[in-house]
Amino acid sequence: MLVFQLLGGDLRGALGPGWEARIADPLLREDIALAAAIDPQQRSLDARSLAARLRGLEPRRAARRQAREQALQARLQAWRRRRELRRRRLGAGLTAVLGVALLATGAMYLKTEQRRQQAETATAQREAMLAFVTGDILGQADPYDSRSSGAAGGGIRAAVDRAAARVDARLHGDPLAAAAVHGMLGNIYFAQDAHDRAITHLEKARTYALASGAGDPAGLVQVETTLCDVHRIGGHLAQAEEACASALEHARRAGPGARHLATLKLGQLRSEQGRHQESRQLLQPLLEQDTLGTDPRLRGELHWALGLSARALGDYVAAREHFGQLLQVAKAMGEDSSWLGWAYNSLGSVLVETGEYERADALLQRAHEVFARTQGEEQIETQMPDAWRAEIRLLRGQWDEASAILQRIRQAWQDRLPPEHAQQQRIAASLAWADAMAGRTEQARAALAAVPRRNDPAQARARSSAWRTLRWSRVALALDELERAGELLDLFEEELAQELPDPHPLRGETRCLRSEWARRRGDAALAVEGAAACRDSLARYYAPGDPRLQHLEATRAAFAAAP
Image (cartoon, rainbow, N blue to C red; front, side, top):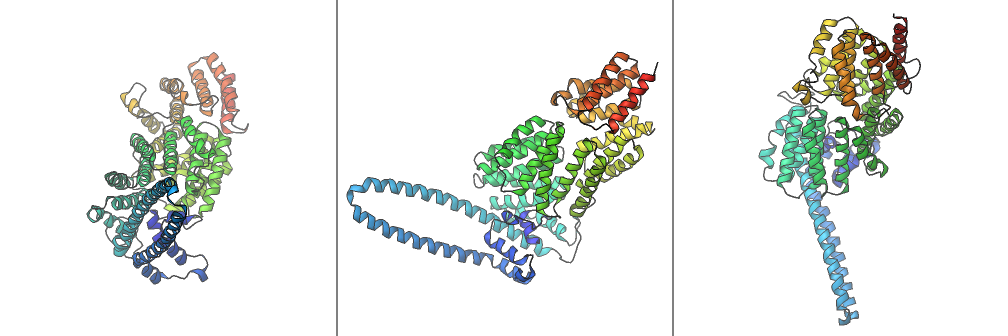
């Protein structure tokens, strides 16, 4: 299992269906299959035998190469004998035909030679990675030390850290091998949320790959799309844009598989940038043409990305369909796949949006359990479902419960995500709303004061979020800061709403908030008009018993009873 995980660059990878696709070397696939068979009767390799086969990998490869070459030579000799016989029979009159045949043969030879060189490149990379794993990592790790931190000492994580420092010195003369090893290390650190280290190794992998010329364009695309992912998840959208654009450019000479991968990652980035319509336009053809059907993980990512865009656009039916497909893919990967956590989390988020709180809470708790089991309680992803569980409490008016959950998330993310990260900003806005509604006005006012004003130069640098802007509008209304609330609502209506279709739940929410804002200011006509538009908008999405509609009815009743 450990050999499989290290070769695949994922220390949490599971030997689920389709695992063979991640190990290109047939000998290594054979070794792993013999050592990790589910049926003990078929598990013919113990650890010592596996080690012996790994140490003898090069002689085994040489033997297979020799057997293939002997078979090829035999076929070539037979072909030459047949060609000579035909030449004697046909005579000089068929010289032109023979010339055409020779040209075709030459073209086939060139294509075969090109494929042979590519295969040799891939083999050299695998050999370098295997040598790095077995010698630099496993060879100097204490197998009895279970520590996973990067501190000095034993353990696999500590061994990876020490080995990572020696890559350049060992492989500086072989850029393709160095690129492969740095790419593997980048994936390992990415999986551990060590984003800075991941970026360092992925950038080195890109530098080495570019230095090797056109040796491995598909490998370069793999590195750049992973780099795009790390920057996107870390909130560095400009750097992610550069990496994804470069991957798409290099994918043009790396084949259709690389182009599809680069398109998928660019579509995910567009969704993160709030450009959800563009994301759909990029991703929908990949689904309709089934371009990722052979890779279950990428197919799951495609459904996930399309579901996120659909949810953001208010198309909750499509979002549930895509997240349901993601759940099927994740279950096939096994119970120890973190994708199962993302599937439960995504389905739960849609149920929160549509007001199905009990079912949503159950799914989100299962998501938290999967993340905690597969990644650990301290990882960033483990708190993601709790953010949606806090949203349920906020919509129900359970302010103190929501605040307690949000405080725990903030504490967990304190040293892992910068304050300007979109997820941190989401938690800050929700926590301020809970504080304002619970009477903790001092904390809420301080949080609102830290939000850049519309004419503040900092506002131009920070990408405003439509959802977050309306959440801060709620905070301002709860604090009776009507001028600030009006400014935030103007920002949404005049700038941010342009990205959203009509109808859309956020457009309905802003009509509700505008009605409340007008009522507070004594503008009866605008308040009545806004309340009617608000109800018509929200009734498209929420059941009559939803707290959002109940709050609206209470507001309308209070308004009707007012002088």
